[in-house]
Length: 592
Image (cartoon, rainbow, N blue to C red; front, side, top):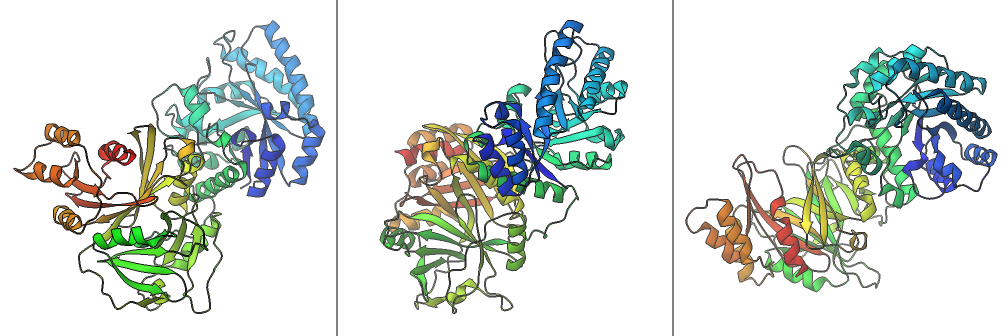
């Protein structure tokens, strides 16, 4: 299906927005009136620019407070409409969005609304224009899609139809199945947006928190199926009001929007993509650094052994149990603080994983390797992290481990696996990252969690694969100045006995994060512990959480090296979370 995006979704001038939409691959745009009014270009020049970019102007919007008003006011509205229709003629746009009135002068009279919209449609038809009437969720008298349709049906005018907007429908918890009763040719336009589930004024929710389909909590795919079942064959168009999007790079936002529509089409059964190959585990976490000594000392104290080195690159393999950490010092002479730079994910079919990533517009990374190197498919996540698709130790496929030459040191037999990875995201790309990992990698998102940081609010959202597959936690730094490039990330390892592990770490000289006594005093009030258990946690700096089903989570953190630290976790009783209740204590301790 054709794909369109409203210029209000993007930052910049109108020409910058049009360029971004075209480069991303959209077919058309909705011109938001404010963008046109602020442009120095004449409507004819905008029309030419749009056509040169291969775009069509699918909608001009919005016209507000038109219907169900006193006749004197409606006459002024028609005068306003004549001007808009002449402007649209110059733009080459043939459909206008009319929102249900919020004017205090509007009356609750469906017959009057239908009569006046019919007269507006008469005027529009003279200019070759269609009127798409939309129910605003906060409309004064018309606030639901079925009410708007009854008015359109009563007007019975060929140039008057309805516009359906997923936000206005789903934010009111309306059942979209009723859309299937509409004649498809009377659905003039479809606008799509998602949103996080929030309890707040619907107008403020709409104006500031909309996001692209797949980034929020609405069933946008279900709504789309109903609209298509009605016979709609127009464009799928994004209309998203979002404070962050309007400050972010327009090109990236447009690309993210198109990815959301591609995934939406797949979810709605409209257009297939290469099937997702959900990762089954984490093959390795790769740290980049120009000074390997501090992280090497910490890994040694934690029981890791440097078991191998890449045959042609300055990359060391550290192992303990099943957990693998690569330390890459190939920084070309630049001073680089230790950072989590790449992740290897186990997949049943690396080539298929790469095909899906490419279909969803994920940037593939150049293959910088010699003829002797194992060919690995890799892509870039929105935050710049390299994601490599791996098939470890499977004879029918290349294994990344074949690039490494043993140092003759054996890995510790201690049972250790990578439990999850926590990646702090740049300020403007949190929702983009959620959509990327959800659609490209096939991970399932958890609910968004907001945590108190000593210097602001810390937002976090986990994604996971089924059956003990990889878990990722995406964190948003408290302010734009503290984005993903500077905030620490961490690798969490699962252990069978965290008390024994921490005693071993301390004996080996590992620097562990100090937890304030007030935290453990509060634990005593919140939970019942076996005799001596809490005293052990207090002594060793272990944090604790328990879910409603009795599942338990014990964890501790190392001190930070560069921009990386490690976490050790012990899960029991089916605990599936990440100790969110303890995050403020950890954040405050790291600040100190």
